[in-house]
Image 1 (tube, rainbow, N blue to C red):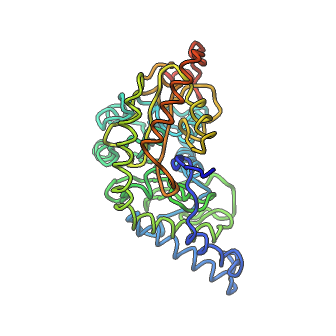
Image 2 (image 1 turned 135 degrees about the vertical axis):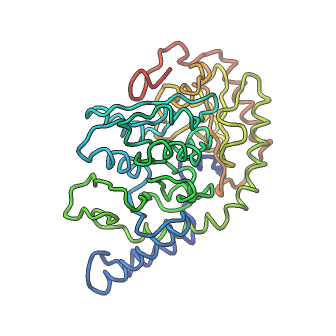
Image 3 (image 1 turned 180 degrees about the horizontal axis):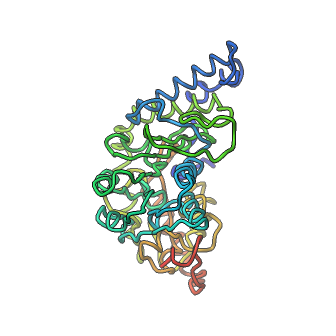
Length: 399
């Protein structure tokens, strides 16, 4: 059976040319980038070339790019790295952030910080006015994701940052752009953000490598104790092959960005229209201000996980939402924060398009999902609908 992969928001396959670019630094130029000998110097040059290549794409200086192990690592370093400077203050985020952000904020809260979790509208968006209105004299950090990983809604980050900085230019602004980098045009200078997280696995690079943009002048406290704490220098030994692979993957994704968006937007819209023709269905996220590759819908009265399992039997890989929350018999915190009742939120299905969608027939896919939904509804099993909701963090995150 040929697989139809519709879970690119969870991870993407590494491109063959990226893999080939990585091989020499695993097999031949394998030196530690901190070593002084020739192998070390070649490794160091490869790392710095990759750093500058990524900086060129994001519109910043190479010294402002720090390598991490991935998106969650970058989020935690940004949030806890700002928070652990010896003073307690106020942090602002939203109720629809990735759990890496929410858990990092909750950890600061446990240490005496105050955190405001902002409500969002029915599309998962937060307004600049709401963010600015939540600011206090002791607000030190704001973390709002650029693009939601579950429903694909794109936040007006540039406008939010302008409003925040106009009120207090000292407040540090972080955005989790894991879903956006490689899929949208990202210019950190234009956005005005101080910190920005990204990871290679979302744009056809290797797993286990990510990055954090740190605007020059922003101090981040390392979360791993080491002998080096100089700004802009990674703690420990950098994986040269992974860094090289991430830089090339981002360069290629950026070169193809316009073509890919032109390709996938009409496919996305065609599938959405077909799925919404199924009775008792609804679209999640903003209808237009969303990723060109994201499709998120809910079906009333069934379990989205059951739909995913039935699709898997047909050779179709899909998800209910974030891979970080799969396996939990709980509605998505993103959907509940957007106001969806439990009986709707449990029926979530996320399809994310991309290069591995070989063999995709949009109309056939819609019919397969329609058949599955009708079959599940015919059993009248009403899964988990009457159970009380439980927050992944605390009760006030789910309303």
